[in-house]
Image (tube, rainbow, N blue to C red):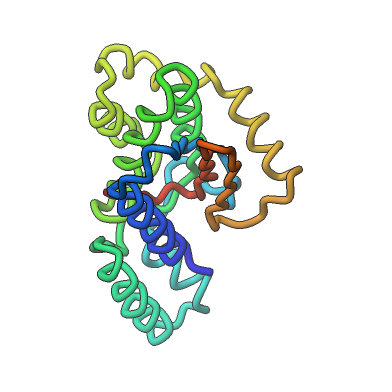
Length: 208
């Protein structure tokens, strides 16, 4: 299914979770979101290419009519989920973004990673941002509350955390992950639950 559809689906899950947190009984249940990397198109170039034209060529046989119908449908999905999709921008390799997400998740915890992904997704889907360009990543770290100099140093070092991220990507593939649809795994206890979200790739974002 189209990447934009999976995003709107994930937004509905996030909205349902926010609604549940407003109920008095939610105090007995805790949710933790953990992100795992997966690249659907690992062969994508780092420089990227036009997103609109890429979708039309690779998904809709270069048919303008099919692409117009897709945009209309996904705009409807997006509006229902409270997001205004922009179908232009760039499609590109997302490895550097995954590397940053994994690092901050391990170093700063799930809340920081969640804020980071919020910004990355919003930039990619609504602001025509390159999914893993340095300025995109640094804007996301600003949103997550990371010191700019610390973030710049990590983003500039393309090798830091790279092997660990690649290992996790291979692990997802070995676990049978072969699409960008988010998977939801609930571990239920007497008074607690763990919610694990495996985020899709290329990066496209949950926006609160």
